[in-house]
Image (tube, rainbow, N blue to C red; front, side, top):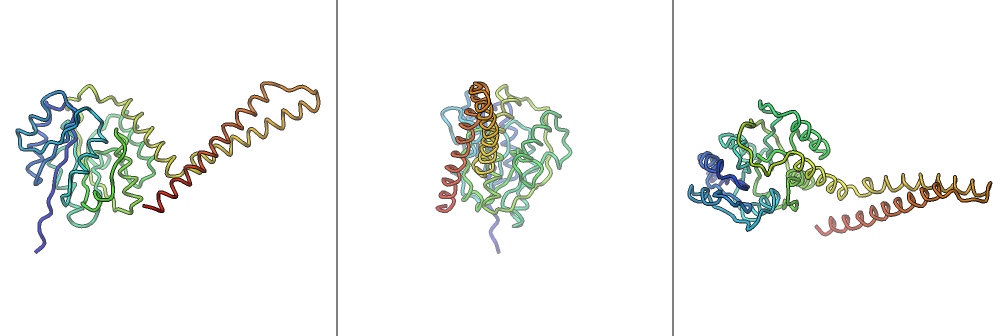
Length: 289
């Protein structure tokens, strides 16, 4: 008879003393172990979690959501881990639904989608998450959901590098590149819970957007840098022709036109050089991986 898989709930937390107790206690009903990564909290988050029987991993200072996940991934070797937020938005009672596809062997990564559930997401958040999901170019509806489950195989192959909120998309991109099966299940989210002041929707969105741009530039450097570089050189060529034509007719150099030609030439060459260097570096890394 096959042994029952071990399931660990992993909770990144920063200054969540008002919410952590309920999340830990609720999660303990559905998993074998609860792990809290205390990301430099200055309140009673860690003490409360430990008193309730959770294993607490400590960061001496606040390093970010991605750094907390990285610490968790390094420390876990269970059959399944499920990540959820410490602020009470995720319902720990939905853990069985999140881990079920992995236990059944149907998926390696499971994402709890807010768009498949019945929650009424604020319009600004819905717009932002939708844009980020489209930019990630993944066949899912919610690339930013933190309520997820991972198999041991996925944990062994995926190690996030992003320190902040961009880690959510990073993990899914890496999972796709590794050929892991990703499945979504519907979840319900509470938006009426007390939110700590450090969570700012604008900075959150900007951070994720910059991370997505970075991943896109690394994944397809020839497209990301090469196409704008070639376009810039074509524009430069047009202005050089214009400059030379004026000079041949008047024996004068139109400074403004010449400066545009020089500027677009420099930009084009820099972009093309960046594209080639990145392409070579990424190709070497992929061959050695």
